[in-house]
Image 1: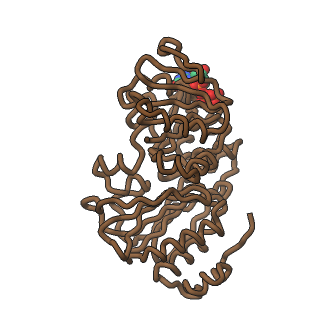
Image 2 (image 1 turned 120 degrees about the horizontal axis):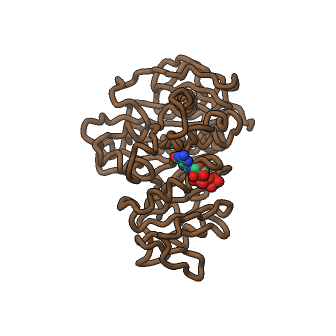
Image 3 (image 1 turned 30 degrees about the vertical axis):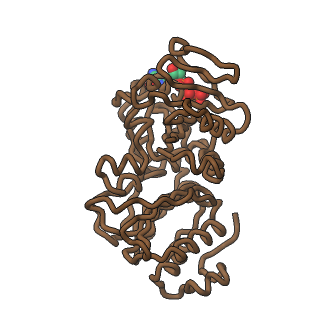
Length: 379
Ligand SMILES: Nc1nc2c(ncn2[C@@H]2O[C@H](COP(=O)(O)OP(=O)(O)OP(=O)(O)O)[C@@H](O)[C@H]2O)c(=O)[nH]1
């Protein structure tokens, strides 16, 4: 089952968007799960029946329910509906929710992790109040930072200047997610549907779109880019220049930043496992999101897909082959808050053979993770 996490601050326009899109064929037979604090304000004209367990059946075959206990229990119930199991579930979170723990709860659940595959995190941002909300609320910044797609609402009420300022702030927080205007897209595809890796591959985009990278970037290139805005004087940008592998989108907003680790050298499975284990053990709480593809030494023709949040990794999947036009290359994108980039890079180098000067090697790190320079166990 595909899962879309629909997030966005209070009043951003999540429910209005769902009501507009629920009848779209791309969502046919989907279930909408509304977080318990939210109002399941589904258009009454669409409601066909309400069952005793509170699940609302809509006239187009979709289901809608409100979380009563734990979200994971509701998702497990939906997965166990036999013939009525929906093909897709859209979880609308409360406006104040940080999507990270919700994703972590799903990824760390033994049944749900196998049953649900994440299409994406879609974050709705109010075109009028979005800039002020981002400046005032860290949860709103986190919702944007982990988004696979950012959807602007209320653009009919916003001026071009407002939208320009907002776009710059959004790009500063999350340079990898495409920003779309809800009013310019008719169906659910491009809004609630189609941000996952499978969709990216189906569209022939290789891994670049899923990882949020420009497809034409030369291999091994290092670059950073930034947005020049500093709304309300609260945002602090930090631009470092690194040598060696990878490229970075260097941004600091409460220490929220993303960077990617790359290497052309195939990586033994036990090396990537140890790297991920140590990284998540030592810095897991600082990882808001991780996505990546790995070229394994043992089976270099079949990319390993990584997907993680906080300290949890989704069970890794192996694809049948590299998409055409995509050179085999390991690329791991990390979106962190307070995550020490130097530490992550050094650890990656130690496990993938690119030993940096003054850096402990893999053997030393496996004995003592503190051997990595820059490592701190705080936070
Ligand atoms: N003009 C205009 N109004 C909108 C648009 N989207 C939402 N609204 C209005 O904004 C208000 C909030 O929209 P909701 O869809 O309830 O927002 P929400 O994110 O679900 O809100 P919570 O569930 O409280 O977090 C409602 O009055 C909507 O009618 C839009 O694109 N244009």
